[in-house]
Image (cartoon, rainbow, N blue to C red; front, side, top):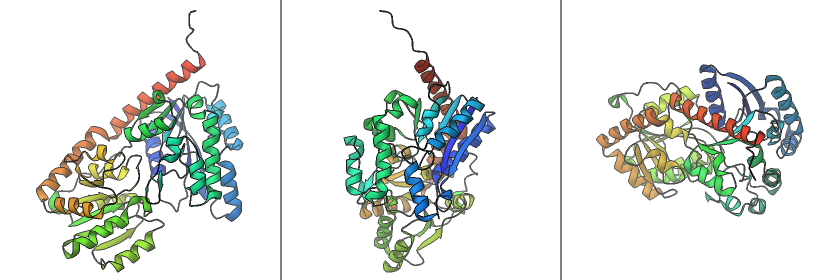
Length: 410
């Protein structure tokens, strides 16, 4: 099978799970013998160009005719079976789906976020989940609150993209299959307007994880890995550590983001120096090594994660997970099997759950083994490849039905 994989890489200075998933999935397909053609753009090309780069990104977001033309040329030359789009924002734009219109190439899109209907991409406002635009099927709330980067001007191109392609019915007419990363995300996106028959659930995967480290060789530490932004709930985690006091274990924070300096100041204010350590943004292999030496991963998210890849990584390494009871995380963690859940944004409940786990080492170790079993059942490369092939086949069938509808007898 020939697959044209399209992706707009986010800026290299910003950690991106979407970039990693794109690279991992295309590598998996190549390993299985498929012919992969890539059509990519990099946001680095407009970063650092000041107002000119900002304007270019804004104008490209709703519709980029140059991307559509470039993709059409590749489609005509390569004639792929599948066009698989991961991220089209900001330089590719949804115009690329029109390049495949009328062809036999089936269009597939992975929903790495909620950007089709949420201008911020993250359905969150004021530190809490917000689904007004999805529920109302309107961009008016986003424009009113300036949801993208806290600016109405920055939100306008995003809102224009959402409104334009909702009115054109782009997702219904020109995308043959959407890949949702969880059943929770699928329900939200279908409720916002995606055709249910075209949305398939396929989580991310972890290819070739290392062997799990024996429990007695692990460090006395708890790990957080993620972007240091409001939506990840690290401030709540620090509040819990302050309440825990001198008995709290080492908390290792891996990642970077806009709140790095603020959170570092909070650590000093709370008197947590030495008990909370910021490792910064680490290369993937090093971050995984740090995680594999831990006894617990905490995921204190305040928003609806599309999947929560870090939990899958923890399972692969035999590390139990304590996570917020929000979005898809309860289904992923399977409380009592691979970890435990707490109320999002509630430092007292986070502390209750994590301290309870930490005091019961046998239970903690058993959950680590349970997580590894879950990984082997659901999140291996083999399992993911089978699901992806089924989705590609469904997309091809849907495309053929559109091009050659079954005649109706009258």
